Length: 376
Image (cartoon, rainbow, N blue to C red; front, top):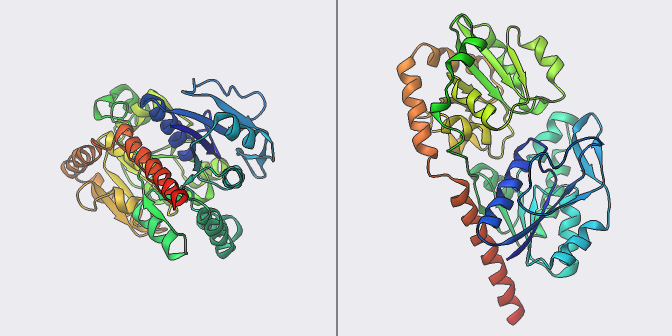
């Protein structure tokens, strides 16, 4: 099968869309298929080939998003349609279509190529966060883009329900895999723990973008707990504000690969604060690392965290609830150990290979439906 993956982000970018697109390309190659990636060009001076891609990558000219330069927005280019034609694509995979993906959808329609759209970013939530309004307009765009796809894949039950409630047709559930070999409990590192918490504090970690929609400032109350050290991993536009909002927290910047896995496993507790997650991969990585989780009872974490068994779900945007949940688990090492072990057991079967095979089955369903429609 010849697949063109049109993605709004790809490594060396570090985010959920980029990671999922990379894992998808790897799995397709492993299964003997022929993927091609089309993605925005990286910033000047960035080594786009720092991570060896599993397949050819076509880079489309791009500009930084105003106010958020870590995000690149693709410019109109003939390279996209040319890539679809030259690769002789059987199916187009649209990863979180917003700008480049919309053009990919249009090009696929002109060329008569089936398209599978992967919903991954809560644009409506972002509209509320960054503009204070515009949620209805965001849903109109989402509905317009995804209605043109042969199939839309939602990463969680909450996302699927949202899409269907807003009139998006042909939606199916497709979750995400986790690297249970890289992320595992035995990466726990006592030397790192002493460095992060020299007085033996309980280490509470957040991993992800430092951006307004993540609402990381909700950890301020946790910073005030006796015997607790907050560790923040990631970068983004909110970095400066958060260093003021989270007194005493350790900021490690962006970490990846085995370094990130070692940090995850060395935490005592993982806390995610953002209420707009369509999936929340870092929750899965924490669970794979044997670390109990506190997360908002909204979006993707509703599928991932079994409240009272693998972690605790708290009301979204409730700093007191986050603090109280951390306090409860900080006081009970046995409960933390039980939650961590249950979390690891829960995700052990969620490999990228298993999830990737589910994706290929979706491609095959879409291709079969197209053949049936043509024959009719």
